[in-house]
Length: 176
Image (tube, rainbow, N blue to C red; front, side, top):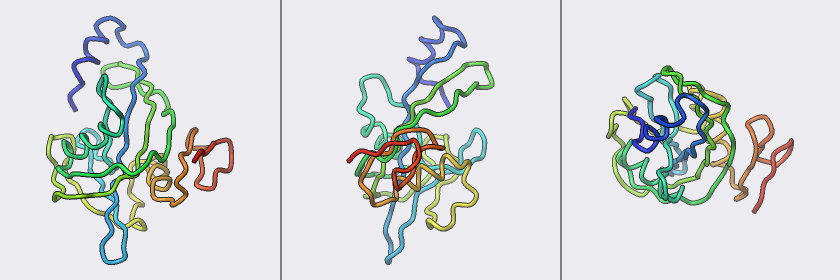
């Protein structure tokens, strides 16, 4: 996946030191015949199955970034319905040594139009999956993003994967 130009310019100044980036996850839902499905893509860099994700560009609204990523990566138009989860991901060190701390904003989104197809090379395939058919997702964190987006609470959860819950228990907080 190509690194955004502004990140490359920052790396000229800070090298491999940790960089905080804002990421978005678009949990895109589609209702068909009383069944809800979620749009997933197989990542070209590691083969993991995941919802649509991406980085917020400078000056870009996060919900706009979610819509842009859905169109760029999967060729679909979506409506962003609500913010479902705000959480810090563990520090990641890329193969080139760059360290990144991602703050992820997970959005519940509704499919509006378009047949999903891998559009920009970041995904090798895209597919609609039933909510009870997510065993092969790339991580428990991705599963939690979908769970919180699908929940009907309308609340935004705050906190890490170990503390956020649909019911608002544990160390995470939810706000209406």
